[in-house]
Length: 262
Ligand code: NAD
Image (cartoon, rainbow, N blue to C red; front, side, top):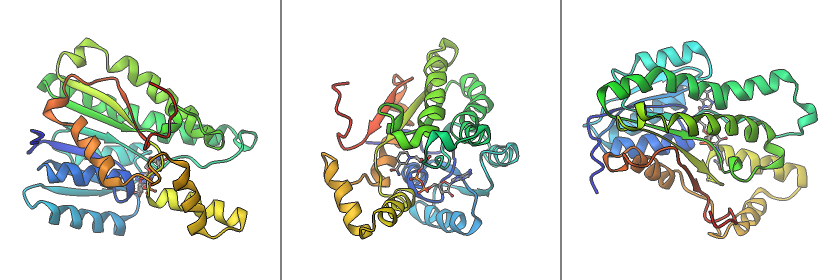
């Protein structure tokens, strides 16, 4: 299926590794030009080179910087001639007990996982509406739908973004101009972040990492973790020409882990 987005420009945030990189790969395969960001220059440049090799017809620009800062966002936006597609992503907040989180911890989580995507949406959606085409995909978390106790900062900040986006996506001045805003909710995906979380669990329990990971896979109905490439494919579809009637939705990618009918 041709997704009809070759030649469009996408800003894919936090994309040197993991789910962001999976989204950038899928878009580049479709012939989308991308600006990819991440904090660390070497990993970002390596990813940019890999993306260029995937599809020489797609232009790839790499902008190193912290997307949760005004400077990081300004640099990312300046590198993109026109944002047709925005994929919002940033690192997730740390796990812990809410008694240990002071105001600064909450503000950092809100900054990264709620206010940064809102700022970027604010910067691009009116231009999308004027041009009559735009796609925004926010990478959030399955924890928005089924909260994970130890990830309270994530549960809270991402729910704020989800509530805001639910209202914004339904504004006729966006929806009637072929501008869609949707959220992708990852369950457990095999990325560096997931491995780091599992390594922490292995250390605390004294169990070997392989065993901790195998036990976690068994907890999922699919008996495996998700793969960043399949996450990217879902993102690319939501960004496709064909997805213009899908907006304000929360798509869970979790191998069937969420137990509800809806
Ligand atoms: P990852 O650690 O594998 O990759 C994160 C990427 O984001 C890296 O490229 C890193 O350089 C970049 N990054 C992080 N903070 C940044 C910042 N402030 N500015 C610019 N770039 C930044 O993580 P992942 O597993 O791909 O997770 C992506 C998002 O999805 C995170 O918010 C995570 O909490 C969430 N999530 C992941 C899973 C999972 O199982 N992997 C599940 C639920 C939610």
